[in-house]
Length: 259
Image (cartoon, rainbow, N blue to C red; front, side, top):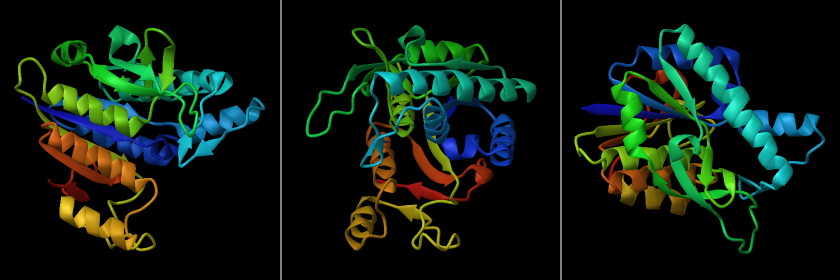
């Protein structure tokens, strides 16, 4: 049985036309699906309106107690439920989940090191049995980037990481029959050789090419953790990983990641 785990960035869901086009494409995908979403820009906007400062470190959000309340409201509520509602309107029997629901994504609070990220979770396990139950019933899980620590409650966790961990867990499920494809959808058409030229999509990247592109500075910033997650998924048994635009979901376009 095949399963598509799709991660969509907040920049897509926060733009009405991009969101609607993506969700229509997602609704049209055949087979079993799980959606993982971001929502960082909305969280930043809501925090600003509440007078809460957003602090970032190396592209990651510092999540103090006040910011945890914001991301819980935004990720688990506003963004998640709007996506679920639109999918229901498109005939998709979607169910919104956080990491706490049936302990779908269990984590521990990241220890403070050189940087104290606050209430940020590093994933320990994914309840693939619970997710498989939803999928087998015909439901489509829509997972917010909130993990769960039994000792600390909800934690903020990077959506790319959650998507990777979900894909890995489903590929290694008890029945061992899931052929999982992981797709990272964002606003660009794939990994670009020239960030200013959207026609410069690199069709595939393997481990050697990845290292070379990093050394040359072609791949940098936020694309590095995305690709690290992609290779981590492949090493753990995920069959295929693709990075593409939300508009190209379900087509051969984009960058395929290969070991």
